[in-house]
Image (cartoon, rainbow, N blue to C red; front, side, top):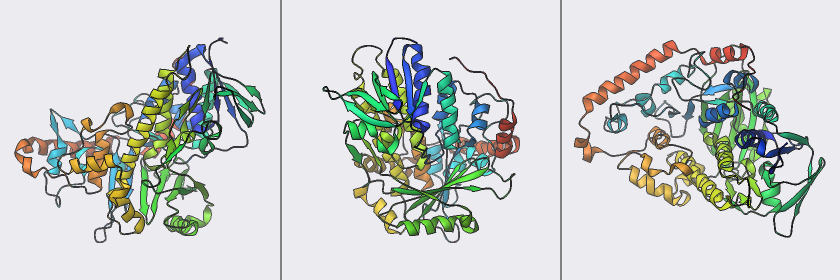
Length: 513
């Protein structure tokens, strides 16, 4: 083992093991990595979903797609279907789709302004008009064909997974990459005279390191309790703070699997519904300031219907926000220890990926270990704030009448930066120039899908003459419809693709060490 720098990660789960595997691969043999995991602390696993960035992460780690789907009990995710986030129109419930595929763009013609200029009463929903993924997902088709290559295919996608099994997959890969695993409880964090962590006293012995990484979840044992990094709460902007979670088996083994997250709004929050191979992962997210625990349990039971008696939900509590300084001295927090912004749009894993990518790029192999801290803190806190804008967008555009939703639409609860963008978007659609890529997790077209799915009006009528290619746009709209119909015929069902991956021979191939 090299005599180079040493990193100690405290905590397992998705955050700990993904951090361990990623840094082991990125930093190589020059850095010794140890992960301390308590056998008594389970995995929270709130929101068993990811964003398409996970494919690049898994590819980088050298985990082949077939093994991942099988071992993590994973399915494919092509976006999010939002239901009841606006009041129903007559007998028709409100629903819209946020796909991962960007709007179709060809020969210099963007379809977005031409959709906006169409008759609101006659035009199809935005996602249906500008991408084939809406039709593919609604038809319960997969985003790719078998044999198209690891993490590749004609449509953009991510994964749903079993959080406990994912941690096992990542742990196995981390060990293959040389990560040392210790099982034991953290007893004391010893702070030196310089204000940094001098050592950790644990059941597995005393641990010293050049850099300590806090993956202890909401407890934030290192960055919060020991080093006192203040927690920046944004509960005045994102109101939900609790969740009831359960898994519900399918009524038959060949039941179709949705290839998107279903997010169904209720009087004080929303319910996620995720399709895994053998069961649906379901969670009722709610704001305790608007409904009590008993009413939340009733809301979940109403959603589950006759199956409610088959499950025993688990209750989780959280507060939306982040550590003002996620990197202090020789300690940096990743995952729930650094912050949490509720499970909408699968931001938890995205934030882990962003943090470990920066740590790997900025890590000093010699010199003061905290040299990157100021830059890291600025980038991560800005990323949190921008994600808040995106999440708040889902809530603040709602016209639902309940107090929770009325308060979400109150301008006082909307971040100023988002209010400014919404004012601009009344006259033009979101643009790539609205966002700085280094501190963004979502692209401008992700905002477009939410805006226009929620019925936001962008008025381009005064500039109609600036969009003279209506005939070409209509041809492209027809092309999208045709491609979508063909894709639903050609692509396999979602369940059949998952089962083919699960039945494939185990591959031991790794892309590097």
